[in-house]
Length: 281
Ligand code: SF4
Ligand code: SF4
Image (cartoon, rainbow, N blue to C red; front, top):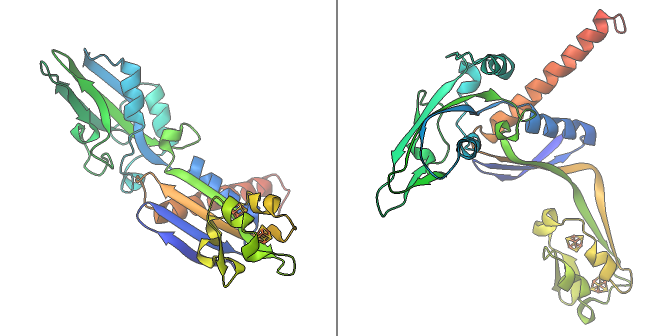
């Protein structure tokens, strides 16, 4: 049975210590999170006026990278595949797209910055996560007027649709100290070289700070530096630290649930295909 310990949990970050799970299973979940879990992002932009110094593509690129709230959108809008097809054909479908309008003028002798919070959305459920992401600056008689169209998409199509900025797993470090060899207080080489401040001395004896062990990067500098080979850096089999950092478009809980659901559907599809071809009964 898989055992899980929550190491960190806040609206954006989820860090789990997962025990008794094969690496390929955890990696499949991680990769599904990165490339398959859909979110809303700007797909194309229609410029009516742009007399700023920023060219259209630059502004469109910036708009695409603004994370949008997507929790409700997963239920309300058509799938990424259906909507991509509509977008490619230039067909505007209300079941696919949310319109975000931006309008602004510069002022003489002053720089006016337009932020993500200045975007006016056609659906309050789909709006920028943060209001203070700069989009462009205007001055003098410069002006901008545009309509940006957001739809559901997946990270495998473009990273702007990925729900996470980070999805990683790493081994759980296991640092072994041979106290018969360790010179402790008279050496301290490993303490000085460790970039994560994992070691300490207690009554002249070298120890690994238990609360810091998860920060070890397995770089092995300590092993290399030890003059008497008293340290071994290893890792625990079938135990991993899974870290998910959401862009804010979906909660970490929703990201995990969606990833597992998608993975399950893919496995079921595969089994059904095998059955259809008589490979499985
Ligand atoms: S492997 Fe690197 S991070 Fe880990 S304890 Fe050794 S020096 Fe520190
Ligand atoms: S470098 Fe080696 S000998 Fe020196 S304190 Fe660390 S483990 Fe002990």
